[in-house]
Length: 68
Image (cartoon, rainbow, N blue to C red):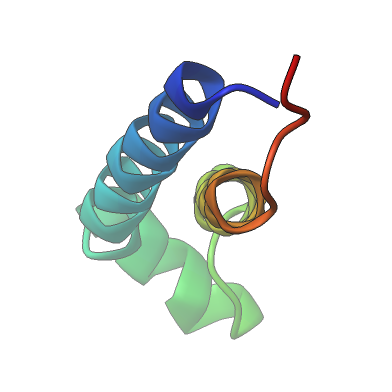
C-alpha cells in the first residue's frame, strides 16, 4: 500500500468519525436511543467504518513498502 493511499484512508476515516459523531448527537439518534436503547444503524456504520479506515491507513504507514 502506498503512502498516498494510507494517508487518504486516514483522512477518510477522520471524516467518517466526524460525521458519525455528529450523527450520534442528532435529534433522530436521541429518539432512537430513547426507544431502543441503542444508536441508529447509520451512526454505528459511520463510526465503525471510520475506525476501520483509520486503522488500515495507520497499518499501511507503519509497514514498510517494497523497494525496487
